[in-house]
Length: 610
Image: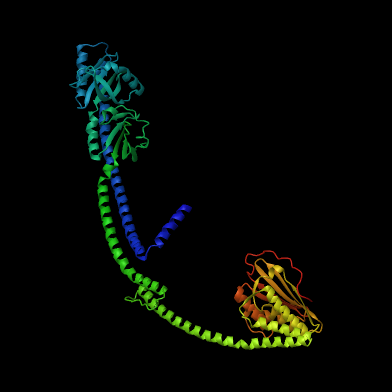
């Protein structure tokens, strides 16, 4: 099955890779040749079946007629064997011992009468109660040898009782050493007065009888007919060498099991149709073998004519298909050539549309597409020019942040010269924050650098709010080198400070943790500040999910949107809080590890200070 699927797929791929013109030709030829081939084949098969059925029926009728003639002839012979019962002289002489002139004359006269009743009778024999044999034969049989057959006659008639006995074709000796093929009908003769056996009568019939019956059958059917006796021995065949041959176990007869019918078989590698019938009177079987080549010869001529017509139609259809496919695909080929020119950068092309069919619509859309491309290229060109002007303006505007940064550096240097370390540190931290912020917002940094920025921000807050805030970083070292977009933690830390820790009197702590889940990296920013109510938390999480602006969650929403835009929809920011217990913001960055660790890493010692 797998090979068939692969073969079908290979054929389909071969067809799919053909040009459109070749595909149309193949489809036209297929659609035309398939019905023609099917109709021709079906017609040939139907006509062949009709011819075979008609020939089989006709042959069966001829075989029945032939068998009927044989049956009537043998029935007459059986009636002849009963005539001695009605002849008083024959009855008297058969029971009389010895032979005199009167007995011989009477018996010979009776035998001559029987012999001349039918032309095919070769000889008639009669044996009396005491074993004396009398016979009369047709001219040409000068000498017969009935003594050689007496034992068989006695055995067969004894087994049959008063019924007549029919024997198949046998060879008898005549005229010294010559042989004659005959079949015999015999019967035992009973005395009318005593009902005792007083003799035997036997009639030999020349097999020329069958030749007159079977030869017309062979001529009509162009076949070869056989007559077999009840034991399967050949009674008649035109090949005299087959006479008497036992065919009981032959493949020629294995299917001839009913009283009549037909079947197919092969003889010496050639197909034949066999038609047979069995006589209900004699048990003999007539079977004729008809070569199928003879039966189907007219159909072969008709088949050849249909084949020539089908090929002619297919050839004409091929020419029409080639012409139509060329006419249909010519505009497509022209459009493909223009597309290749567009691919090389040439946009001043145009499809000449002549018709309003699908191909014409394709050409019209192609022309509109090229026009739109030219317009878009012009818009891009103008946009790039505007962007260059904007970049130049942005570059000029960067002078002010750099001026502020350089001024802060000057103030820090003056503070250090005046031994004012607190002002110098504050100025340094502010300068670091400013430097980190004025670089490109889309720059990718490492987790380590982002944490360093947050740490600078927290140190600045510690200077601003002395003793108010502490912090811890519990992030595994394996996470430090991972790439990360800028300003992810700082807005969250700022939110924790001003909405959580600043509103309470006692000092608070901000803890940043990091861990792994499969290929995702998770960070949490936790504070132990005032927290928020359930209603406030639900409103904040809703604003993060639906994008609505919340006055307390602008920074968080910005971080959430940036994470989802850069790392995909699986990335998220979630807030969990309880009143008086603080707030935890969890950031999930999807796929940051790729094929990295699949189990959480053990957290290393915290960096930073509390």
